[in-house]
Structure formats: structure tokens, C-alpha cells
Image (cartoon, rainbow, N blue to C red; front, side, top):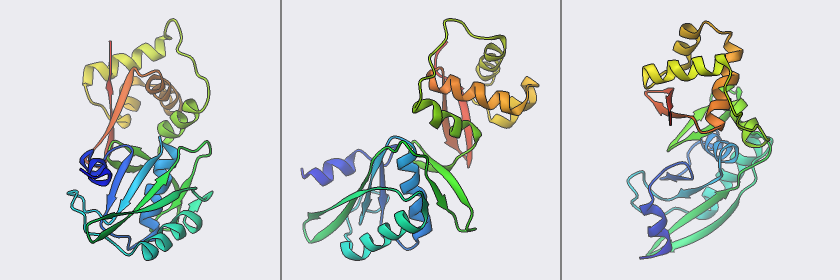
Length: 208
């Protein structure tokens, strides 16, 4: 099995995204920024969502990626590229490294927003994810014991199994900024996880 097919078999996820072709630089800019803001990743252009290799014109697609990275990301996103051949098809491989600078992408409404990868989704950032980004590039150590506020947030998440932040705001009675801060820290300490479902981010307890 070729290296390309082995990569495709991994499926789309945190570090991998498939694109049939690039029609909109603003849309692809979100993916590039999300990879840079998360753990880095690879974009395979010329591959359908189902993993079928259809091929592209690499020069045309590279031009679109370069425009997305340079003109529609702030600051511009760095990337490297390569072209792999599978039979008669050419696939453009775009690799984005994890960045120490937080990048924003310009959406269809021309507003600049941060984006992150949540499993195989590219999602717009919120205050929790922005704080988490800072923690993952800093040195926030896990405490030996938790504060009453942290324990209350843990309890609420445990009771609900999956919970949106709006419900945490309501049920905790804490200031929104305090909930954001606590939740970001708990995720950083790997006590709480999060996933993207039905266009919303849900938080859940990873361990007791």
C-alpha cells in the first residue's frame, strides 16, 4: 500500500483533513489557521471526504492555499507542500506546523476569528479555547488540590455527562469569565474533555 493510501486510511481527524478541491480561499484559511492553532496537521487536496483519490492540478491548488495562508490569515500561516502521485492522479499535500502565535482567519462576513480543530471539525474559537491555547503554550501546573469553584464546575459537568458552556454559566452562578478560566484549566489538566456536536461544543469529565 502506498504512503498516500496509508495516510488516507487514518481518516479525517485532529491532524488530517481532505479536500476535493479548493473553491474558496476564506474557507480553506479557517482550516489552515485551525491546524496552526491546535497541534498542526496535513491537508490533502484532491481527496474526497470518503477517501477516494480524484486528483487535482497542484499548481492551481497551491495558488489557492498560498492566497488563503497569506491574505486570509492573520498573521499569515506558514506551511510546506508536496505533490504525491497515485496512478494517474496528483494530490497536493499541505502540512501546517503547530504555531506559537495564535492565528485568525477571515470568514465570509470578513470578520477575523480564531479557529481550532476539534477532532475532525474546524470550529470558531471561544474564550475557553483561547485561554486553553495560552495554557498549552505556557506552564500552568496542576494543583495538589482544587478550589471550591473548580470542584463545583467538575461536579456540574459530572452530573450532566455532556454540558454546554451556557448551562455551566446558568447552573454555577459564577461570573462567565471565572467559568471560562476554570474550564480552560481543567481541560489543560486533562480532567475535562470537549467535543463538537450539532454545531456546539460540549464538555465532559474525562476522569474522576
